[in-house]
Length: 68
Image (cartoon, rainbow, N blue to C red; front, top):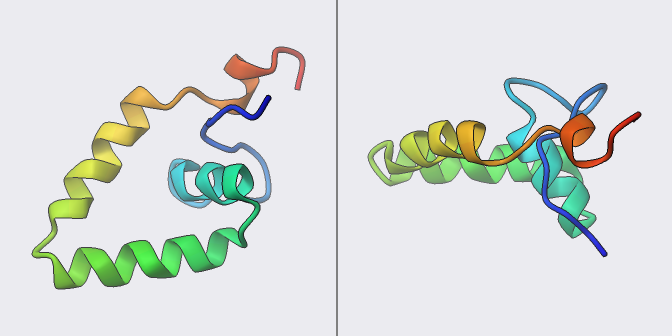
């Protein structure tokens, strides 16, 4: 069963949110980051606040899979 988490390690850039979403959907995290930035720019920064909320809501990978 797949679980959503913030990634740690090489796919982590800022807080690991886009990397975790990319791993969950099996998509390159760079594409997720690019889409997130473009949508944030064109939606008057609404997604910026969504990203901040995701940082606090989505657990880290080591919390979901202990020992990772």
